[in-house]
Length: 206
Length: 170
Ligand code: SF4
Image (cartoon, rainbow over all chains, first blue to last red; front, side):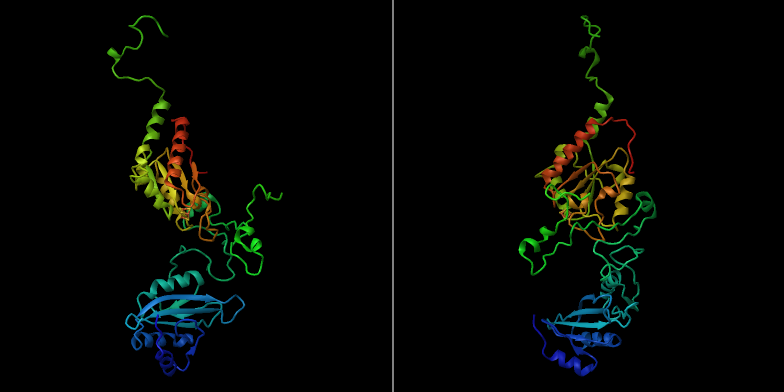
């Protein structure tokens, strides 16, 4: 990966509101939500960042403000460099962001995914529906307050919900999620030490 | 009743190629040896299902090589892979469309129990929506394990009363 040394200066000259964002790899900027389309368009047209690689978002936690940040990754197919642009959503309750579909048609599905997982509404998006979960799913699963195991909900088919009772149930976590925790002795830190599945050695408590 | 007279006992010269048996045994013999699978290949386990169907493992030896993509023509649904909650109603609909008698093999950890996907998006075992006859452990199970499951299912079918009312999912 090559970094374009001129790009950060060019962007900060063009957009005084864009501030550098700490980054270990490519140039990165924090941009106010109102300027983000102009910055993206400038990067696409003037800096040859013609490929929108990814649109994603960060939920900093239910208490944080601003809570949601949307992140765009751009790539230049001629200069072979990457740029990251981030913008915080103004509202923590009903987060919204201008849609980049006007600049890249490929932003369509990325933004639908961000909407599906975080509930960030992209204003100006032609068809903002869920893309991974079904349309009537009531939660936004990648928000911090949403448990990994899930919450009870109805599945998409009413007949089948009626047939099986509760559709979506919380998954049994059995001591998970199984990630090693730093600082503990290995025997306690390893995922297998946290397994709460009942077996011969560990009887199910009555 | 056996008598000494050759005229009264079974005479193959007169009767031709006739075998006398019970209806159960005959019907179950047909069912076990032409169990057409409905391949529900939903994730990585489907690759092993394909391997089972192809020449090295050759599920055709058990009469189950005719993978039918129409539920109307299949007898045994092989759920091979992770069933998401979004896909689950579809799996159930396809099961409902299969003509009885019908059986289900839950292939692999995901289909049997949700596997490693302890998450909001994954159905925790396909037996929550359809009745499962044989569970196969493994992530993914080897083709031999699937063949073993098929043989177990065949021996189950062989011992069932052929004309009993087929159960539906509770
Ligand atoms: S059991 Fe393993 S191999 Fe099979 S679908 Fe699940 S993750 Fe894939």
